[in-house]
Image (cartoon, rainbow, N blue to C red; front, side):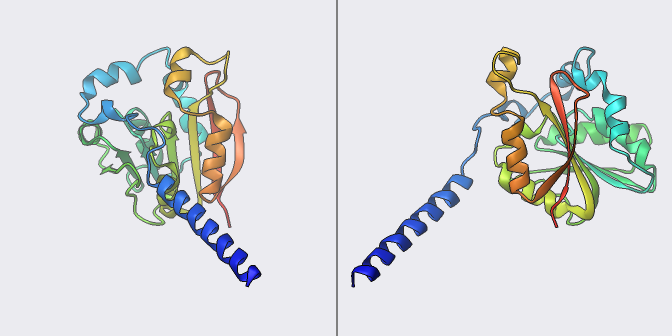
Length: 230
């Protein structure tokens, strides 16, 4: 009787812990982080995102080369914003390839599609994602590219699970985000970015990815390349 009672208590404890985990996964890890993107003015963000002095803008060509894209590939630019990288990725995959411009803001997606199609980049397709799902077709992508956007994921576990499903078996994930180091990083980064590289890496790995490359090409950012775990 005593053993059965203890077993019952343990089962209740396990059930409660599991329930708490499920509840926790339903809650945003950073509520309000995307308030500015509810109805953004793309032109004003062009001035912020596409300017000299922003590290990823200054090294945009080197970043694109690091993705090792080839004609015919399908790549997703998750957090496409104003389309800076989408417009650079499209020529790399060519007309026979495809670029998904993914963003939570419909205004951004519309801006990217208009600006790309005006340049003849008809291989670019827009996707308005949700806070917990990238909305990409399953097993469609050779590369998923996330630049200065992962820290905006409110439901990283769910979002990364959707991205894993979107990658082909041999597909790769590239994440660029801000280094967050106490006493080193700027006050803006410390206040805006919820966690540092090791935390984000562990979250991504927990979603079914394996780190295969880390590059120190930046000062304020970091570059991580993952593949799907077998």
